[in-house]
Image (cartoon, rainbow, N blue to C red; front, side):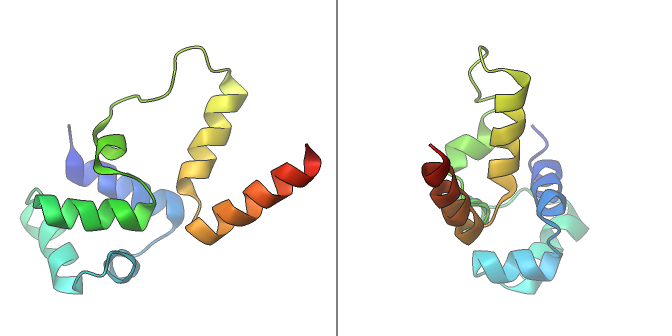
Length: 101
């Protein structure tokens, strides 16, 4: 698994800079910059902090395809968009969905 590539992809999906990721993960800018510049795999504590910033667990991050195979294309798209949302936007969307149900 390309861990740095996946971090970069999740960052880009959210429109986050390296600085924003560092802030959200409560890590130093130099820690994030060093990962990319040196191509280092993050330590477990660093990966945990990055995953928390993205609103996911390390096991979710490491899962290649954690979605059930029986999901429709629309359901997969919805979950993919959900994963890209910031926690406050997830809360707002969930509230809207509950109103619509």
